[in-house]
Length: 459
Image (cartoon, rainbow, N blue to C red; front, side, top):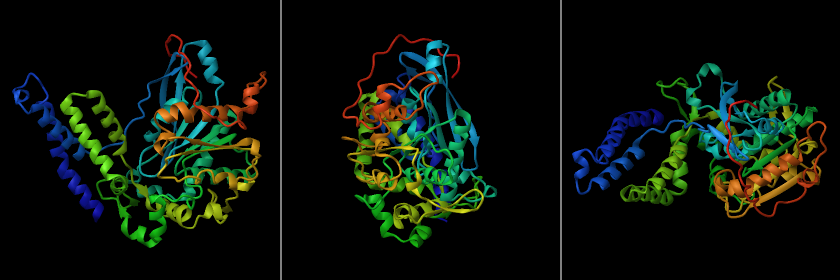
C-alpha cells in the first residue's frame, strides 16, 4: 500500500516539477521580461531547486564515449554481452586506429567489475570503469531494477547472485582464457563465495580478486549500517520495508525493497550534509557559478537514481551477511544452478591472488571488515595476498574521485598486472614478479600524455 501511495504522490508532483523547470528558465532568459525582475536570479534559482527536489530520477547512462590511453583518444562502444533476467553483463569495447595502441590494448588484462546491488545502479562506478579502461578490458554487472522484471521471470535469491557471478567468470574465461574479478562494497561477499565454490569444485578460478570496502566480516568496527541490521529482526525487515510493485510497472506484484525507501535511508544517514549541499547549490545559481552547480547536478543525478531490489535477495543478504555471519562462521550453503547445495569454503582457494582495499574514513564498511578475507583465504600463499588502506578516503573515495584515481587505482593496476600471465614469447618483468608482495606506499604520479590521435579500429 505504501508503494502505491508513493507512486500516486510522485505522479501528482511530476507536472509541478516540470512547471518549476520551465519557470526557472523563464526567469533566467535575458531576452524575456521575466528576467528584468530585480529578484529574477533568486526566483530562477528557487524554481530550479524545487524542480530538482520534485523530479523523478531515472537510471543514468555510463556516458563514456572515449578514454585517453597514453595520449591516444580511444573510442568506447558499450554493449550487452549476456542478458539475464535480473542482470546484464555489459562490455566496454575499445577502438583505435593507431596500430601501436591497438597492440597494447589487445594484450591487456580482462577485468570483471561486480557492481553493488544495494540501491544504486552500476553507473555509480562510472569513474571506476573509466579509469580501469585505460589499462584493462572491462566488463561490469549491470543489475536491473526489480520492478521492471515480470513475475514470470521467477524469484531472485542471494544464491542466484553467486551463480550469476560464476557464469560471467566462466564466460570470460572461455572467451579470453582467463580473467580478474573486482568487487566493490556489497558484492565482495557473493564474489568470495563464487570463487570459493569454483575452487572447491576444481574449476579454473579467476587469476585475482580485488575486494574493495565490503562487509566480509561485518562484526568488525560495526557502522550504522551494520547496527541497523543486527538490532532488527528478520521479521521486522520483512514487515516494514518489503512491498509489492504497483500495477503500473512490468514487475507488478513482485515483492521488493523499494528504491524510494532505500533513498530515504541514504539521506537519513547525513541529513545535514544534504541540506547544506542543496543550499549551496541555490547560492551557486544566484552567483552564476555554473561549474559548481553542474557538479551538484551530476552528483545528485546519480545519488537520487535508485532501483528496487527483489525481496528474497535483500532479506537473505541481511540474514546471511549481517546477522548470522555465515561466511566467516563457515556455515554458508549455496544452491547451485542444478539445485545442489554446496558449502562455501574460502580456504579451498589456492590459485587466485587476493587484494583487499579499505578507506581510512569509511563509515559504511568499517575498518577490518574487508581485510577479514585474508583470515578466510588461508590457502592463498602470503606472497599472493595484499591489503591496502587508502588514507583520507571514505567509502566512495576508494572507487570514485581523486583518491581512487591517484591512490587506489595504481595499486589495483599493479596487483592485476603482477598476476597476469606474460604475453606469449615475453618473460615477466622484475616489477611484475614482485608487485604482488610489495605494498604500495604512495600514489603513482600521472605520466605525461603524448599528442592525441584518432580512434576508429577496434580492440
